[in-house]
Length: 323
Image (cartoon, rainbow, N blue to C red; front, side, top):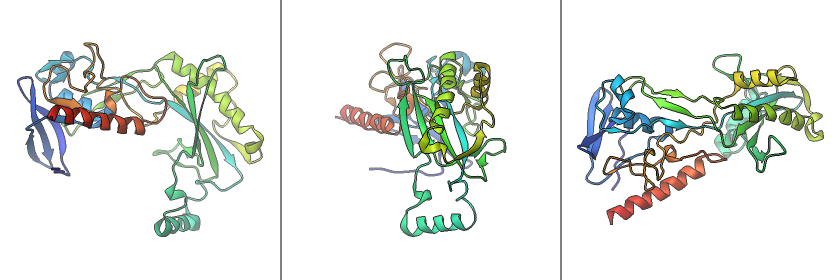
């Protein structure tokens, strides 16, 4: 009962009045239309699900009018409420082998063979090897950041960024529950044009303050006895940041995403929510969104488990409707 089409990019949801009846897609230069006897389920993720809705005429009326798209449902929340785990990393040069020194030459060949033959070694391990939640300010009631340990260091002065050639290790910080909100907007009406991803990562001063407080905390971790004997120099930043102004400047220049985008098709019980609590698109029959875009607020950890839960719950809702 499952047919998978590969090499196909969904353009928009096909609407008959206020009812979803299928999807319009492209396969190479060929247009493809797939009709649905039951429901249409949109699961394109927090970056693409809102783009599909916008091209379908479901979204903020003013934005749709700008591109000449007929507004079928004026839904101001589509594409808004974008959240991600913003943060940055502090790196140190060390006197022991790390992924940096092991990623070229004979060590790299050895690790490749180890993975190929035994599925072990660095190529079988995660980039983040340890995580911990803590308070950036001891006065807070609960942890507001999480720290990530990485056995490598990345050189962001080159394009594209690449691993440093010297042995490095890094500690990264992420704001667990960010206040900053971005949005997804259309770049054009063409499905081949990527949407505008406007993260605004440190758009809220509370997020900037949490990162600022976290940088000295990470420096303290590197100074602990278990690590200090291996650290041989500063990598990133290359010099101490000893004022709030310097910390803020560094945070603004180096804050990046955590690849945990959520929230752009928010569910909720209020009329401004894109989806109702059953994940149905408001104003459209037989259309659901089931992916990380439905989260009203970002979870404190990685989004994988939460997204699986959303998929399982969404499947239950679909099955219930079918019966």
